Image 1 (cartoon, rainbow, N blue to C red):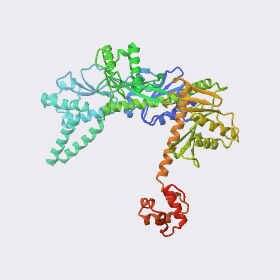
Image 2 (cartoon, one colour):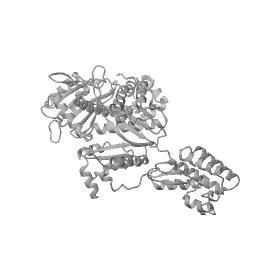
Image 3 (cartoon, one colour):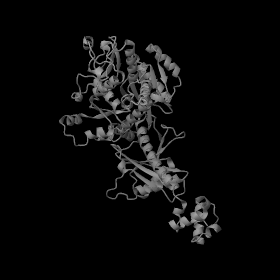
Image 4 (tube, rainbow, N blue to C red):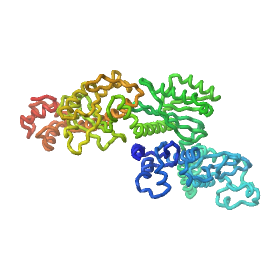
Length: 608
């Protein structure tokens, strides 16, 4: 349960689909959510009373999520995943109905429009799927009003000798009794097809022309009706990202953090998002994004024969590959159709790619903070450093500044569950030489541990220092002075090129240690170090921006609001004050010679 709660805290507030998995990684339940974090959290709130849900929660061991652009996309993806996995706890949601479509039949001289479910046995054009039958019926009703296409069964159509009620209320053109020519009826059908295909600009333009004509003829009632229909049409025909015009597409998202790479593959077939899968390949140091993606694509498609039989026509990536033409030719040859690798920068394809990247980041975050992964990395860290026990609490300190300005230190905490954010601390570093990282490390270590072993003070098993041998020695001296020599200290130096995977670990009385780029211990250290750096940089930027917005006059003793106002009024602003000489400052009413010296020193970074 602690692992599940750790995963839930890192879920996003985006819409999407979640899957509950058992201890054998089988899908127990698939659900959709407008807000993933709120919806999934509700299952573990302790207020669940439904017996079925309580039984489900007892068996859940892991959670998998897929982010979507909208709730409608989540509905359609949920349907696809339920059909694919047939989870036992989705049985109450299942029925014999599939998602509804709109069909325009082609088996009759006068086509009809209707709602359709199931296998596409009828001849005609299909549009959808739609999220609900209500949306289909509302769209058909609108199309009846706009294009007056018949909805009656063929048997009813053939038996008519006079127009039905739909003709009387302007919902049909009366083709059953030849009140409209076949050519005119086909034009209405074509407009309806264009609208359902998303090419509705021509249709709306025609309606606008009719609305203007009705206004000119003073037929304001019809003009108002056409205006409302145009507004409703724009709302109903909202394009779904889940319906891709190109048909078959694979979208590859990429994310990397703490030496670990996540590749998220979203598969779209026949215009529908069928699902997504996360891959975590082992990546050696110095690997570039395009190299990783090229290796993934080649191994994914050529390594599994079934993948070759389902190759899409388009593969979307963030970057252009070095040997992209070679890969495209090889894939096209195996697929027996042209396969294009595309790196879109705008438009619908870019939105698809952004969604894949968001999913990759989400999957990577869940993977990094997975309880099982953290426990394995902690054991690997114990083995790599030859520790007597597995470290249960690890802290890391980092110092951040910009050329010595607004120095801030951070201290982050990890335990066996992952980051303990309630124990994170920030330290504003002062009274040191600007840019002196050694003094900054001394100060933050002293302030963190100055209470020693007092009751209620939790000491870590290991302390990571973001820095090399010099920073490590400074931290060691402070810990010795405080009588806390049992805490294991490790300095994490970035290496000559500062590339991830080349870190050098320093310990007191031990030679420098370099771990391989695929080491779980190194990944764990990178993860903690990166979190400390993020926390410190965020605090530094906030402090720097706050201090830069503050007037230099506010930090000078003896200068209150009234004297600040008089100084600014006398010199016409802060710029004039900054360039004023000492003699000019003494001429301001209420400013003594000693106060003028302090003001001059503050603006000229000197002492008098």
